[in-house]
Length: 138
Image 1 (spheres, one colour):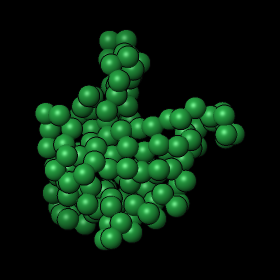
Image 2 (cartoon, rainbow, N blue to C red):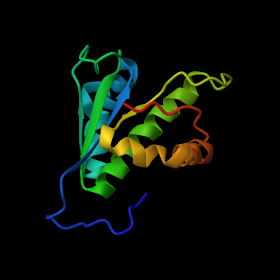
Image 3 (cartoon, rainbow, N blue to C red):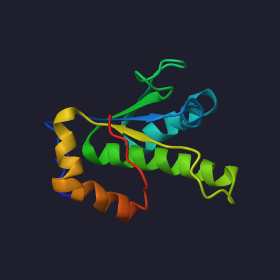
Image 4 (cartoon, rainbow, N blue to C red):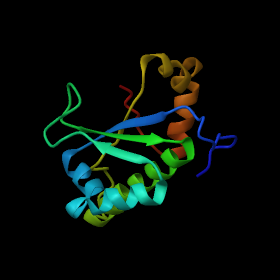
């Protein structure tokens, strides 16, 4: 993944992405003794932070993952995290068609319109092109 036109110099504005995962998925991202998260940070150059055990996003039982850095660093870190979660999901039960894990993106209110698009066109496109059946926006 690469974001065209991303500014790689030190003047780039701080950027972050926050999303929610189950407690068990958070444990997978951390890894034994923090090995997985350390490896992902090293590979991507992004900083990856998780809320503490039993510290949940309001109204959920999900933990917060925050990835910060340059745009390309964030994209690489998110790719590593989602690949890890997907591989574990597939190894749990290859015969189960229903997803057991969901990842929810936390989006500021001011950005929701751009994601949803006029009449829902943008979000429908993303759902269709990614074969995702439901986006939950916080």
